[in-house]
Length: 335
Image (cartoon, rainbow, N blue to C red; front, side, top):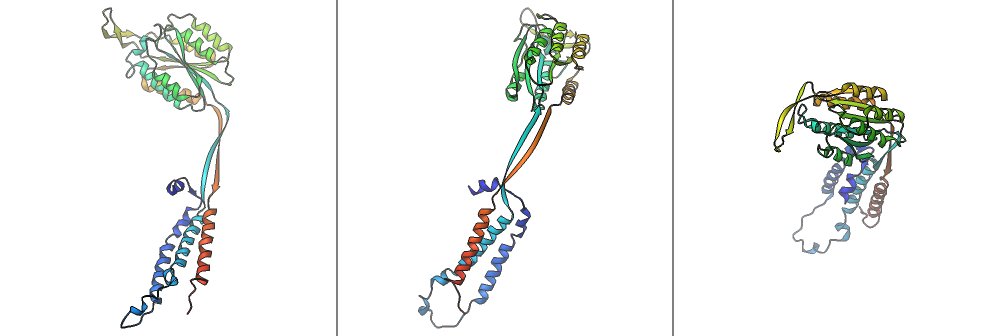
């Protein structure tokens, strides 16, 4: 119990403890002087002294012990033990962000390590960790779109949703318009000043119910900024393909990335377009977006201290007072 108490205690003046060597010096000096004061005489028998021990001799060291305890308590009190209560006052406003991620079959291509999908999920999870004061949601899309997580401050649950995203959950395709429109819908009623979508895809628009340009106009009308990321290398990329007999083989697949569309969506909504060709560049893109979109948050740190020196000061006074009383009353020495 005492250990746990001291574990949660800070000292305002810890340098006072450099005076602790005074205690063993006091003990040494007391023992040295006590041995010098002891008298002796030569006798032929000690039988007659058997009953001469009194309470004064039995308790003669008590005043000094009280003085030592008083000095220890005094030093602790002078070091000013205190408990600290740290608080943070957060003011301002964060940003509402939707991560709009492509989970179509082509995201299994291995021009990223280990593939596009896994690289995207890891970088997105790292991005979430760097945005502690923002609300973030997740929309996934392939041939259709789905809200995997609404905007939330629960980053643990959000990261679980990001890392569990897989191909095959949705009808295959690349419905960029549906993905963007669903993302905007999740942000439409947000009251924050800044609302952004980070849309990542590795292909060109295929399938879906809504044209990407229509989705772009919806984003513009409600003031949602869209950052777009094209995720693919140049030329061809190896991807797993399933044959009619169910066998999965690796085949070269042509990269079909509609950069013009992604660049137009970003420019029209006030965002930027980025091209990721490998894991490192994808990481750099999310870092760049993180720098561009800073939350308007002010954090004020408050440190409150509760002083704990008073019990030690009182104990020191009691020990020293008891020493004085005993030394000059019950245990008083007569020359």
